[in-house]
Amino acid sequence: MKTFLFISLLFYCTQIALGQRKTVTVPAPGVAPATVERVLRALAADDMQGRASGKPGAQKAADFLVSEFQRIGLEPLPGLAGFAQSFPTYEVRTAAAFVNINGANVTPDKVLLVSGQPHLNWTDSDEPVPRIVTVAAGANLMREVRPLLDPRENSIVFIDPSQATAFNRLAGYVKRGNLRVDKPAEFTTLMVLGTPPPAPVKFRVAATTTIRTVELRNVVGILPGKDASLAAEQVVFSGHYDHLGIIPAVQGDSIANGADDDASGTTAVVALAEYFKKKADNARTLMFVAFAAEEIGGFGARYFSQQLDPKQVVAMFNIEMIGKQAKFGPNTAFITGFDKSDFGKLLQENTKGAVFRFEADPYPEQNLFYRSDNATLARLGVPAHTISTDQIPTDKLYHSVNDEVESLDLANMTAVISAIGRSAAGIIAGKQTPTRIAPEQVKQ
Image (cartoon, rainbow, N blue to C red; front, side):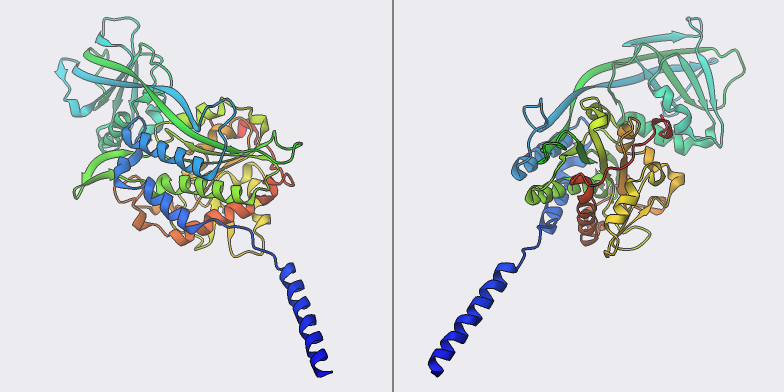
């Protein structure tokens, strides 16, 4: 009898155990810290040479990202044979051989010249007469001259000598940003660091311009939507993989690795692609994009936007510089353009009660909403916002050779990426749709 009771009890306990085992749920796969670190270190390595647009390092970075999309099992964008979305740009290099203003030669270090004329021999007797522009001591130099860097008329710009530091930065930008999406028109902008001479301005300028076609590549992969009624709607996750490349050396180091800007955001795109591929429950189609040429004008995002119907894009998670802790502390990030749609409020709602939280952009004076690849799609009405953690007003490593992996907080960065993945769930499932952005709200 005791034996029978023991066997019965053993059988009963076994059944309970088996029943309990059947009810155990396996947690959903999360963002892999190992993937985050591996991809980040690869993109920010010295052998990527700072990933400057049109340079071998950027091509190597694009090849690496293509291999990652293949490994994960993404599909190419319809119409593409692979993950590379190629587009032409034009490298324009103008070398000023001679500049004379009112009888005095101007030294090369005080001259910047942008021209679409292969052989320029320009004097004050030529028609049409150039427009004379002056940039005062307290003016924002880049804002004043940016429209003139793609000349649509002949201009001579005199820049107050007190702007010498800004002028040198502008010179670096012009040399770095000599790629453009259109062939230049045959107009010229001459910029001179110096006070304008008395009118009429007499001048002689001689220069040579070379133009070369350079192919750049976005890297794009998709996870098709699993709900037939929602699959045509797209959710974009993006970051830019280009950076500054080789810059003037500091203590022997000349490689601007761009670990935070924006290897961190590009790493997030790869890690999220891996995460959502494993989840395999996206109702809407997910697009993962690593943009080229953000640093020199957002050309990659511009080309990408022309290849799709913006009305089908329900949201864009653009990820930029998430490698350091935000001013709100660990487990936080901010969203640019928070007031332009309810995208940010939806993400806050979806992380309510969690350790992590999203905040509005604390640096509105920096105009960050307009300074990354989200702005291109936002101009088309897409609720496209950038997620970041960078304390940009005080970030001493921004655009320097010291933007290295060792300066980043990888654990916090992984937490940011994981939070983006969790907060996007409602949008991906088709249960939430952010409000559209009014195009007039986005500056041109």
